[in-house]
Length: 227
Length: 227
Image (cartoon, rainbow over all chains, first blue to last red; front, side, top):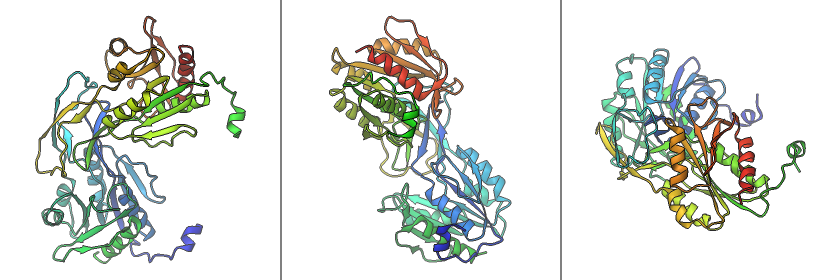
């Protein structure tokens, strides 16, 4: 046992025997061989969730887009780059899991056509048509069995609560973790987050600013009670 | 003196008394508060150049876009995010330098309009109009004094040599370092690179695959002879 785990109060292994699938990080969508579209997701929330799930006793799989984090020890790790790859990996792994937590921030858009060669600078005012990427949660819903839990994240910059409520209902989720990048100390890159929990038929619960690891333990302990 | 530097043969400090300005990494251009356009530049070539310049005795400044590298010790460091910020920083620093090496891969395009709020997924097939970012080397040329050296990098995926020759001439550079991401072990993310050197009135010289640090020393030793 390591020094740090012996000093930290041992968490009750409430997820022993459970399989948890977590997605994390952004995806990248190529414009040409050099350039791509991505987003500010750091992967920290998803990695904290995967680490916490494993510490709570779950057999944990982490599917991650390109980030600068080391996969937590003891976690099955699958690296992806694009939203299409993430989609395929989630579909593959979902059958084997008890709970999918979509903490990833897959790119919602991808260039309609990828240029095979680097686009030259002299073609100024180029127009890029972006098309929707597959809606992973919507698609996974069709495969969802009664005993499987689906958790989504919602990142909004306006009408946050009403958008999150809509997503919870439309995607038939068991929980939405909503955050707002405009909140201080919350969202991308930070080690802390400020989230609001939404569950069907329940009032939203706003949590104070906490470390992403603390949030992970609290979320997973609630999920353990939903199985 | 550290163990590694005492084992390594000491380089002759051919740049003592010189000021070298190096740019490195990609830039990021915001689409909305969440998404951005960037490129695969890792910053490794520029960081290796800055480190080598300092080791050869130069007073070195490194201007870098967002990368996952630690700035070399003993180097003045300026962090930037967008091409416009890089442009401003280079203009500011260029006056004080003897040689500018543009190893950065600034985004050549930026969204014409930045959305203030996160673009919703239901607006599918969104059209993004990209406009040219400032041409830093072209602009710097106007400020260039006779005793200052300008070095550019060229990354091409097709017609590499003719495009690089054109850039050398049009931008009035003292040297172009050309590489091709299609070459094995060369370009982005790699610790090695395979470059071809172009200088006005000289035949291009293709170097074999080398570490980015070795390439840096060789380039800087050539530059030292050009002052």
